[in-house]
Image (cartoon, rainbow over all chains, first blue to last red; front, side, top):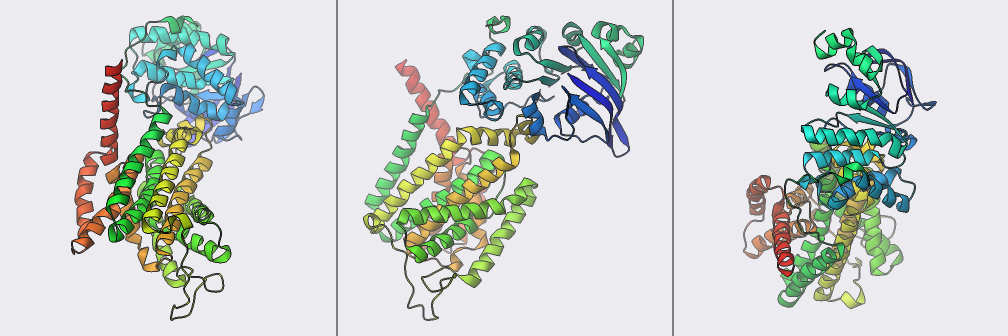
Length: 235
Length: 347
């Protein structure tokens, strides 16, 4: 569970996050908002790449803000990035092994976890294919598989469905819904696809200009006229 | 197996190439370097044998440079200075305790490794042009320093210098079984193969994967739990080790080293050799190193000013910029395609 209190980030005269209060408790939480709302900044603060001006973040009672990005990884925080970052020169399994090298308890558990993650995302038969030969969907799957290594507590996913077609998005949706129960973890999902968020996320936080616009059960949040006006551009 | 993994697989953009096992890769390294070395040992003598021995030492320096550039995208322009530093340490250790030759080489490697790691500290904050300029300045600083202190020649004190006449100079002895020029060349060839194995082992294991993540995106690497500073320092240490081994082998070739042989410009030539040969495959470093020594040696043999070599490298660099794989990369792709066809025919 992630608890955010009075979180403010300032870049010069701009405040991408302004006294943000939120609590992610559901197995799958959504994070939506218009462009520039502060979604990726929040993920960067959670990952340790942006230092906030003030505020606190707790991950299961542990304070995150004083920890380095690597310590946060050791604590169980994982993330994917907006742009998929599969290494072209490494095979699918090597891309996943690269994180297992640093987060798994030992070599045997690393092998086991990599095999399990590959099987989960459906890449077992393509484990030895180089990153540069994988299509976009497979590359997204490698990115997701990387986050499943080393008993993660919370996985932050930044637009995992970007660039995928309808059939692939449907496969992704089914996969995302299985992650919390299979890996005993929590998923925080950013995506512009409101349908994906609506069908996957139990609760959703809506940001607008760095402030919390709404938070609660996803369906109720998406039906909120204020949210529809700010995010979807219609009443 | 879950529902997802039962879904119909989505086709890859291109078919994958044939899988080449580490064992086959190792055999290829031994066969290629072995055959080339045997041909050189059987056909060359005197001048050319000495130059090819130097070329293999260059190849080790290029291997280190290619490791930094290919694995981490870091441009280091002090590689030849590290060769000199390794040679200095090896000569110092040899004249102090006269250890077995292989230990002398290792001492040169370890010495340059430590220096390389310290010189690599700026890289923790810098990249690209700034790092290149800082490392170039370090190479210039080494040139100035070694011109003043010179290389140890068996004299007293830490610097190991002798009187102005130089009559008391002591040469570093080669191993007994490699005392002849041909024997020493083959010895250097074996060390070259071992160093290529060392780099390949790194590239295909935990450090290589960590370097690949760092090169792709440092934030992503940090989010994967990679200790970025540690692995960058490791790369600089390994690159320095290779340069140091090269310096120690050069000391063994000539018996002693001359300060004038370590100009700053040679570090730039090493980097050009890295680009010409190709930085992503071992063959690129090997060919790049050999070319950077072979061309000047050929010009000297033809009685042409060696500065023409810079013009040749400059022209070749124009082609290298169009093809970042380099000569070694192109040959590797060709070999892999032939291997793929051979495998297909066998199947």
